[in-house]
Length: 247
Image (tube, rainbow, N blue to C red):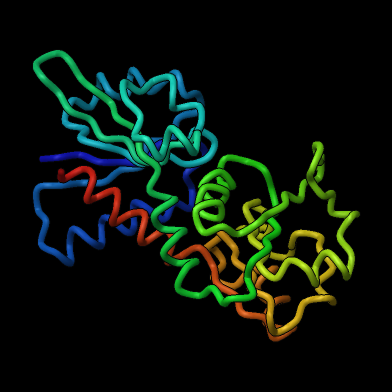
């Protein structure tokens, strides 16, 4: 039996366990299991690895996508450049184990974004500066899309939410929410941007997938803008993780 899993904290509404459990059943994969491993402290990872010697790989979510890096033996070049890891493969040789980190969020985000881009989506606003935004930045730079961060505590070169006005919204037709604002159960919340300036040329992308239509996306729909959530990205990154674990 090969064991896989997800580390993070908390993991109450994890996508990954349900996805892989359904995948294993659908594809008649009977020798694999996927579990949640909520770790309140990343230092508990060593004990987890010692306890589950059949663990062949795991995904990483908030708040450990950056904190996991010192525990790894190797970093894939993309993960190294992004500075965040969401997939780890484990190989063993006797009592020696080797952990290698990857970022499959980049893969999932790029494919799901690229298929919906229009020629006028040349300037983007990235809402939030946390670990989730790192994969977004990597993809935007690859696609030569100029971007500015929006933050509640902006540093030099960033916008604050109070800075946002009609000119800024009009000049940035791609807006990507990398914050947890609006995620279940706080579904009544949305990033505080001036939605009244959205048009049908805007594309709003929310990395959140629960609920499937956040208030951020509902506001986009109301303005006639194109929008999508993070579900396809999650499915794509999960399949890429599976591919890595089976190399």
